[in-house]
Image (cartoon, rainbow, N blue to C red; front, side, top):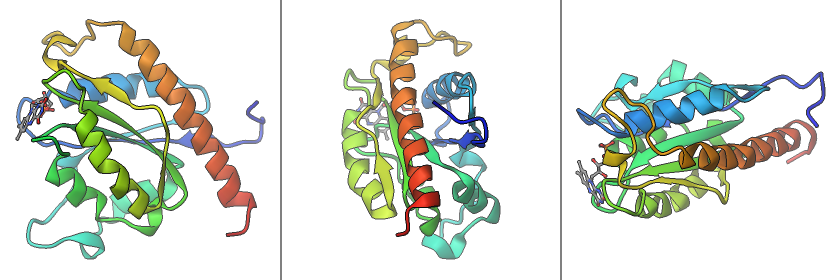
Length: 190
Ligand SMILES: Cc1cc2nc3c(=O)[nH]c(=O)nc-3n(C[C@H](O)[C@H](O)[C@H](O)COP(=O)(O)O)c2cc1C
C-alpha cells in the first residue's frame, strides 16, 4: 500500500545502556538487523555510550546537534531498554531529555530486556508516561526479552527463533503507526 512516490520511513533505534558487558547490545543488534530488512525503511543504531552527554547538566541546553537532527528526521523510534531495579536506566532518560519538539507526533516502540523472566516489562511500563510527555505516540506491541542470558550465544547469535516472529509483529505495528503519523504531520493541520 506504500505509494511509489513515498520516501522511506526513518526509524532509528536507541540502545539505552552503557553498562560493560551489556546483554541489551545483542538485542539492539538483532532488532536493528530485522529493521534493516524492511522495505521502505531506513534505520540507524544510536548507542547512548556514543552520545556526548555531560553529567553536570540536563535537558535541551546540552542538545547534541547530530542526535537532534537524527530525531528531527525520524518518523518512528525504537527504544531498547534493560530493566534496572524495576526501572529504565537513568542514562537513557538523560539522553532522551536532550530533545523535545523533535519527538512530537512520532511513533515509538519499546523492547525490554531483563535477566529475570518478565523481559523488562516494568521498565517499559515506567517509560510510557515519559513517552507521552515527550509527545511520542506509543504502539501497543512491545517485545520482552526475558531471561536474556539464555537468548543469545557468546557471539550474539539469537538462540530462540520465536523472537523473529515477535519482532516482526512489533515492526509491522510500528511501521504502520510511523506511516500514519507522517501522513498526519504532512497533511493535517495541527
Ligand atoms: C543496576 C542493575 C539493576 C538490575 N535490576 C534488575 C531488575 O530489577 N530485574 C531484572 O530482571 N534484572 C535486573 N538487572 C539485570 C539486567 O536485567 C541484566 O543485566 C540484563 O542483561 C539486561 O541489562 P544489560 O543490558 O545491562 O545486560 C539489573 C542489572 C543492573 C546492572
